[in-house]
Image (cartoon, rainbow, N blue to C red):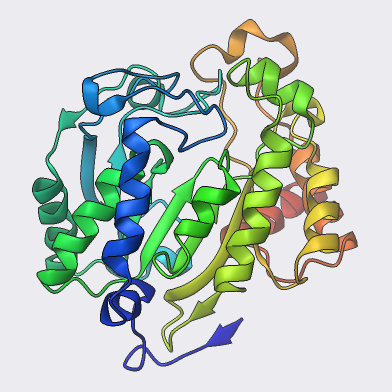
Length: 325
């Protein structure tokens, strides 16, 4: 993992602002609310007129919470937490969503651009290591407008784009020079599974997510941390192990190994729980077994991946010790 000095670090969006290009980029992104094509659904609704697409969101951003968050990857959490802003609604809405009251039902409170900027500044004031935008895809115009306000008020933290992975590569290109750290999921490797277990129109999820991740890597490269191990810039990929190999974990690690550097930060997550409507699908209506998680880690190593999440590696050691005792 590459290291850099925190004192020399400057967020990408500050460089873009200094070059006089941030406002131009914001204008291009903000125009999406007039005929929304922010995500692969490309609903085409006018959200500025109050219309909503498949995600359920209007032009007024809703925020469920903002606070220092300690449940993320260690390079994001550090000692003082990741400054997480949880946005309501989602453009994927998986049947097994662990955050379904927020993602599916849209629980949260409306916020103006200025109020969203206030939250960013508040998280910086509280000592967070970054601004972590959780489920940002469908509210990008609101985010970038708020970012411009926060920049003028002194925001200087790395910006984390924490996404389900269901992205249009054209929109990710517009974030070049704005986002410092990309944190996408790659949930499914088979479109039949994404169509069955997410929105019916999400059968193109694997192709869309993979194209987006390659563009993310082109922009920010592999993970760079400071002298204390806190993330400054780079790509971090998440993959949730599911029962009965539904997520296609073996194919996932093979894809990463083929298309990205072997030291790409990969978090193979064992946190599967039967949530929301997962119980309606027999093949995922149970927890994962120790064997299913361990085979996932074995596949990752066999593929040559060298930068696996520290907590996943620790969990692997515990499970192997239990099996050996």
